[in-house]
Amino acid sequence: MSMELQTMFLFLTLLVFLASYRADAAEATLIRVDPSGEGDYRKIQEAIDAVPSNNSKLVFIVVKPGIYKEKIPADKPFITISGSKANASVITWNDSGNIFESPTFSVLASDFVARYLTIQNSYGAGAKAVALRVSGDRVAFFGCRISSYQDTLLDDTGRHYYSNCYIEGAVDFIFGNAASLYERCHLHSLSEGDASITAQRRESPSEDTGFTFLGCKITGVKTALLGRAWGPYSRVIFALTYMSNVILPQGWDDWGDSSKQSSVFYREYKCYGDGADTKKRVGWAKELTENEAELFLTKKMIGGKNWIRSMPTRFKSWTMPKPNNGD
Image 1 (cartoon, one colour):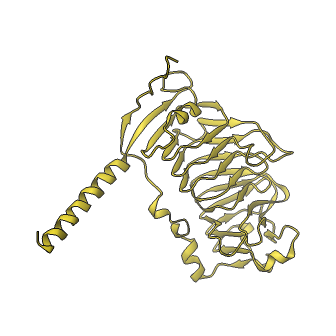
Image 2: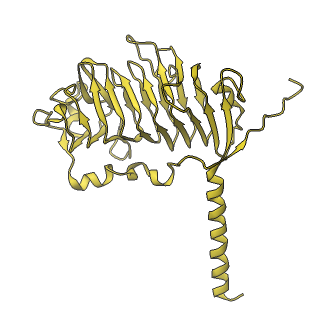
Image 3: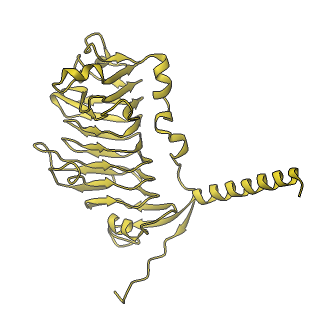
């Protein structure tokens, strides 16, 4: 075979592979969860448990409207869990204490997607009570409502994307050391004093982590700070975001350690609203420059173009696993 024919053969082989890959990526196995018993399972955790541990195919779990009183570890890759409207499919629990043990919902696997769900911890004030823990890589949330009081969202590790989500809490209610982009999200602070919205924990300049809020909206019941420095290299950016008068003029806090002031990266960029006036901000928080903005105003920071996936276009029916030993 000539070199030209070999090249053409390899090219055609690659095209066939890519076509089949896109077809596989567009098809998902459909599992239905319905508390009335009309679906494949009554509980969300039962559906997750039924997926093989080494799963490599897309699984789409549809959650019918209802109140799901479950404490869920999502530990299987390539799963999407979706309701139809966030306020209709509610996952709720009531727990407090350790930030890794109290979450209502914990994402522990990679390539996970949640759509149109409410995830809440109903414990209330007085203790750490996490609603959602995200410790997997390549994880996305679309149109979800996430609510608690203290430490609502443990945005722990990995690359994450939040789109059009509502996130509510009072104290450090978005915290952790993930690399995350929040796009067009609504942040609602329950703080009545100087509690912080964010507590980002970047611990060295070599860590490619941080929280970026792009085109978001901030409201609240009284007053709050944009963030405080959990880690010495804490990195948070608010860009093109509406800030109501809930935001205190100083904006940021060093968590009682002035040495962090020279190492944190707190930036704002073309924000607007009564709380966006930067004239009285702390001196170690800056405006984002045009050059800096190139990295933070797109999905480049999280490499999202390569892994944020759209809805499947085809579905195949779920086959119930056969029982073992007659059980």
